[in-house]
Each structure stands twice: as structure tokens, then as C-alpha cells.
Image (cartoon, rainbow, N blue to C red; front, side):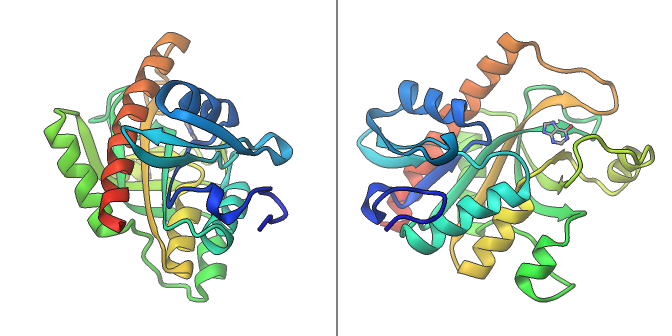
Length: 241
Ligand code: HPA
């Protein structure tokens, strides 16, 4: 059951997919966190894997950067591969001064400057939210594991090199925690396809202070998020059966 961008059988994917942005990160996760992992697709170097995490089958599929790329993979996974749940794991730029580099944010809501959700959902008023039971499970697991996990609204932007100099302060005023480029597509598509979704990001750079992680810090921070997301994914696989 191949699609234009994923060359695999429906049964090659687990029902729960972890979705980093970077394909090389997908390989890193498969090699370091999954047992018996196998490459299931590599169209355009978007390498997807399935393997076992503590006995539970989990797949990894990269989104690429930005909503148009992410939406292609998300739509095909939900529609054609019997995937029930997609958990994005990515990085974000922090707005809120309460956030520190390396902090992890679970997106309980999302706003965007993109028209994609409006076009997909067919309405101009909409809420972009994760699956509430999945959000709650992640927050509970965060507490149990003693993580400094923030939950709140994030901003999905179509623009990385933002020209609007007033944007940061407006976002802080509105209580928006951080910016990234994919979550709004995930939440809109989960709604359209009636599937499950959650987005988890770590703060890799700070937009008000200009601080950013060194490559070593980036790697260890990512390891923290990957370990946590694996636990969330395994719990989710148990819940959806
Ligand atoms: N902007 C958009 N996406 C990002 C950023 C950013 O500053 N940092 C990490 N992902």
C-alpha cells in the first residue's frame, strides 16, 4: 500500500508513530532506542523505521521541516497506513522568559499564521488541540519521571526568519510559550482524519535572549526528550490496544 511519499505496506507501521523533523534523527532514534528496528521506507531520504521499545512496537517517521512537508507524511500515515497516533518530537524557539533552554513543552494548544488549518477544516474559527487523554497521559508521566514539563499554547509559524520585530513581545503578552513549524498541521489533520496526536518540543534557542544550545547540549537534551517520548508512545500503544 505505497503512497507517493511512503513506500511500505500498511502492516509495516506500528499504530503509534514518533515523528521528529530531521530524518537523521529518525535513524538515531531507531538505532539507539529500538530493538530489532528495520527500515521500512526511504523515499526522498525520509527514512521510516519500525522496532520494539520494551516489547512494544513503535514506528519512527520524519516530518521534514515546515507544515507542507509534515502534512504530506501525516496525511499519508493516517489515511493509508492504519496509523492511529502521531507524536511529534521537535525543537522550538522559546518566547516566554519562564522557559529555559532544554525545557520540554507539551503543546496543549496551538496558534498559527498559516491558512492550512482553515483550508483543511473548512472554517475560520477552530481550535488546534491534541488528543486530551494523550496530553493528560504525557503530563502525568512527566510528573512521575520528575521532568520539568511545561504545558501550554505554542505558535506554529510558516516563517523561520521572522521579519516582524514586534512578534516576540506580543507572543509573550499572549502567554504563548514557543515557536516551531509543524504542530498546527498535525493537530488540524488529526481532527480532519479523526485520529490521535500530540506535540512535544524542547527549547533549543531563546528568541528574547538569543541563547542557544551547544551541539553537545542539543544531543543530550534530545536524548531526554526521546526517552520521555518513548514512554509516552508505549503508554499510548497500551491505551489504544
Ligand atoms: N523558529 C521556528 N522554528 C524553530 C525555532 C525558531 O526559532 N527554533 C527551533 N525551531
